[in-house]
Image (cartoon, rainbow, N blue to C red; front, side):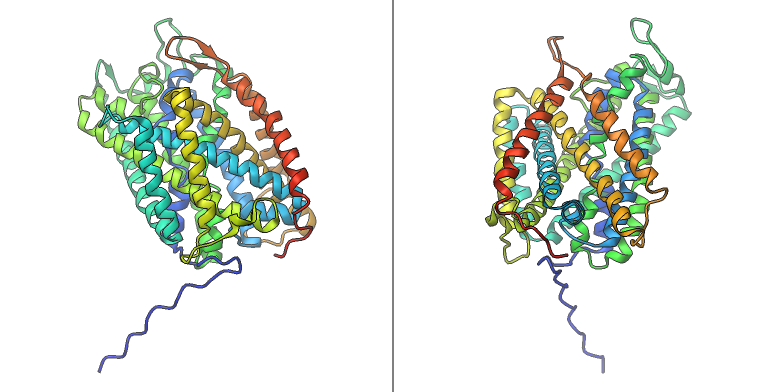
Length: 479
């Protein structure tokens, strides 16, 4: 007689009230797929056009910095797993003020990122339905993502898993096809795929790896850093993992290597398959390649992949901000009603609030114009990304200073590597001020100065906010 089957054990509930339902396959793909978004599928085309093949070196530099970041985050996660991630670590290591600043800057990062991703969804949806306004398709995408996040953490993770599978499969396919094209010197439109394209000149005779000059290749580091945004998501997901002690080290060690292969490999092949000046802003470089080959249907598939990438990134934003806002609410740094959870153990009020803010940003897009709004949102988000990364490096350094090497996954070369990370982020922040954006009419807009000008504005808003919040902030936090 067969033995009776026992029902699977109910998922464990964390001390923070979250259901630990995320498995190994979820974490691996969240870690890999979270950082593969519009920055690669859409943004790299415009950056290739403005920077040239030197963009490959920019991705390498940013990738090295991303590696240090993930090792710093890994040390923190293995010290203590929490859905509050670096905001919770900042509260413990720097006090309430540190948690307040890092939390709201992270919220800024993902609000602006989410708005940019929704605009991108609307723009690419017009590829198939040109008469549908960007705002309409962006709103429909937002409704879908809010519904997924309200259902459960596992629903979010399942969406991310399959979206990441699609993105990774598309990149692997392009890596294979692109390599064959370069090796065989295939004809791509009027050009020949070749390593020589890395050094080809433009209509003015400017060529080489740095056709616009070395300095320009450095200036794009802020947008390249933005492309790596979301690799820190594994820290927030740690609070809902089934076995974080096993999954975190594996994800941390693998994610940067894989992302470097995807990013650096893809951008390198793009620069070899076509001359860099064949790409343009606002058009996916992958779509450009396949359309030049006369394979328009593949370009259509790649547009679907871009939409999937943008949906995935925006989905990550709703997930992460909802949990960060709940942590901040518990610390007294955000309204108390943001701490409410629904019956599915997700911070529903935080997710809905973020959705409303996203909707406001999409509506504002009507006034600013689609492409312009996308670039402004992306550049503003980069400030939040840089601050978030700086918070993680700072927390890791303070953890070592206060408690020593207490983590089972120590950051190699600490504290020197932590300081290298912080100094690199400071240099990139200064360089942002020199960045420019050329409109369709040829007018040059100093987007870098605009971006830097937001820093004192954010500082004032944070100062005012802290003066109000400190009356409600908890002087000590339980860990």
